[in-house]
Each structure stands twice: as C-alpha cells, then as structure tokens.
Amino acid sequence: MNSGQQYFDSVNYMLTNHKRINRNVVKDTIGIAALYEQLAEECTELGKAALKKSRKLRGENPTPLTNEEIDANVIEELTDIQLVADTLGIEYDKDIYTNKLNRWTKRVKAKEVLDEDHTS
Image (cartoon, rainbow, N blue to C red; front, top):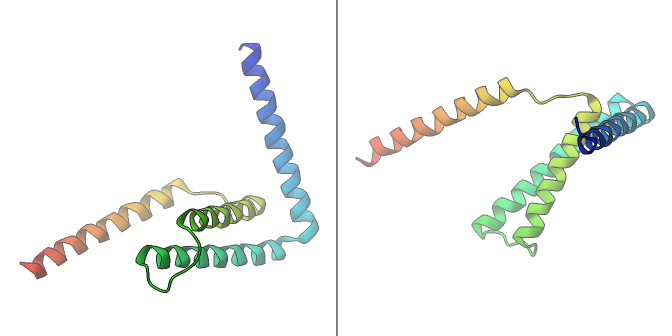
C-alpha cells in the first residue's frame, strides 16, 4: 500500500472513530427514549417538507419557497433522520429495500395494465 493510501485509510479511520464517539456522547447524554422522540420529530419534518414539494410541483396552494430551497429542506430532514437512526444503531437493510422496491414495481405495473384495460 502506498503512503497516500495509508494516509487516506488513517484519516477515514479517525473520522469513523470520531463519529462513533460523538454518537455515543449524544446517546449517553440524552438517552435512548429522547433519541426515538427526536427520530419521530425528524420523520414528521421530512413529511412536511415532502408535502411542501408536492404543493410546489402541482402549483396548488402556492408556497413562496423555491424548488431549490424545498429540495435542500428535504435533503436536510432526510439527513437528520439518518443521523438519529445511526446514533440509535438502526441500520439500513438491503434485503428489505430490495423486496419493497420489487413489490412497489409490481403494483405500478399492475395498475398500468388495469388502466389500459379500462381505456380500451
């Protein structure tokens, strides 16, 4: 391994270790129950941001925010959820994701078939 790679590996280790230590400080200070309350709050805030985006896309019930501001807010709230989930040790499950995506795709395709049947 070259010295550049060693440097990046050591920086990555330090950053990862630093994040773990910080998450533990938060968890140990405010407690698990408060983290779950915060997770619920952040999920609600993401829901509100998504609703605002749908209002903007439809042009109904206007909002003074720009698309860029709304998109930034959606990203911020999703990041907040991920941060709290990481702090709680809740991990992304690739199998659940894949299964849900497959089920969703089947439902959308089935609806397209039904829509075609009703228009024929």
